[in-house]
Amino acid sequence: MSLVVFDEVKKEFSGRKVLDGLSFEVEKGEVLALVGPSGTGKSVTLKHIVRLLTPDDGRVLVDGVDVSECSSRELESIRRRVGYLFQGGALLAWMTVEENVALPLRECTSLSEEEIDERVAKALAEVELTDAAEKYPAEISGGMQKRAGLARAIVRDSDVVLYDEPTSGLDPVTSITINRLIRKLNRELGITSIVVTHDLQGALNFADRILLIKDGKKVECLPPAQFVESENPVVREFLVAMKGEL
Image (cartoon, rainbow, N blue to C red):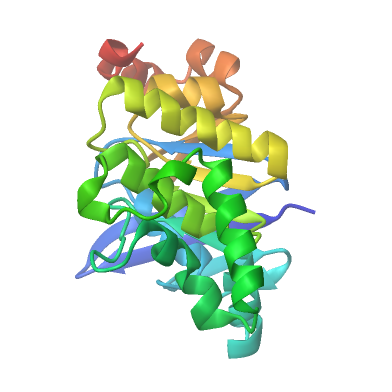
């Protein structure tokens, strides 16, 4: 059974269709990249998975549970399993990196401080950020802030991580590091990843499949090698527009 399912999901804001019957599935252990023009509903799609938004019509299922219809207890159980890397990193400026990563454990679990310290150290090691544990967000680079946000997203042993533009605003070298970490966490921890990105070259390297969304609808969803060879005219148009990335 697919881990995440979108079934004819529709969403409007102020009368403007953002998602228009969007349907796709994500398999357990898969890395799915969501690509497409700006404003086509990619980030809105992510928010539906943890019910930050709810569909106007259609269903979003996580491990067989309809997120829109589930109880508060079921929703909390789903949210415990899903890490979310926000576009800006969303670190608290007055906390160290270590404290930022520990925050969801302190707020949402009954773990001891010793257990929290162990989990935080493990998460920071996974994203190669151990040396920055005692620093504050303003003292580290944008790429390091993204990695700290990623450590916070996985510190609760998440099965799924949602990435919203993880390389936005980063230089090419740092972007490569973030993209490598996405694949590393998938391979080493078995994390299912859904990645909204404008970095098509990165997606071709880290994704198992690439889903192109346009006007709130699925255009094509294929493995990278098949995606770049697709004869779908919308895919061809997108690839031509993105040719500077390839």
